[in-house]
Image (cartoon, rainbow, N blue to C red; front, top):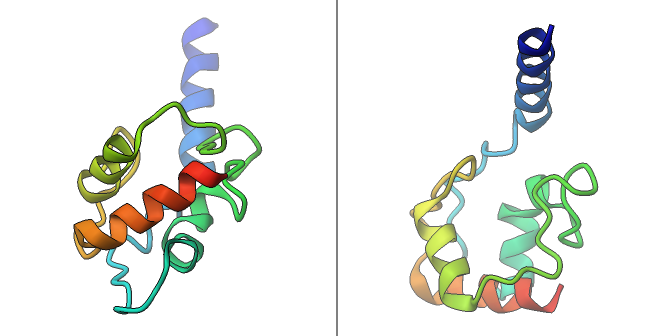
Length: 102
């Protein structure tokens, strides 16, 4: 019974996250600020105010990560987060600074 429940939970989580990483080919325009980039590339998964797509899942508000860690995650991805190779270090830094304000 526990294996069935666990498998069902994994399937549910996967279906809820479907579509989150659809825009990892996003490329910011030169004059975009961190909030604009976040709105276009991040808010689909992390919510418009960083509270997460489903309230707690993928929450960014109040993160303990430092700016460098956030930049690394944006550029290289993570467990379920895709990498955003088209967001250069400068723009990733703007996004990271914005995330720290959430």
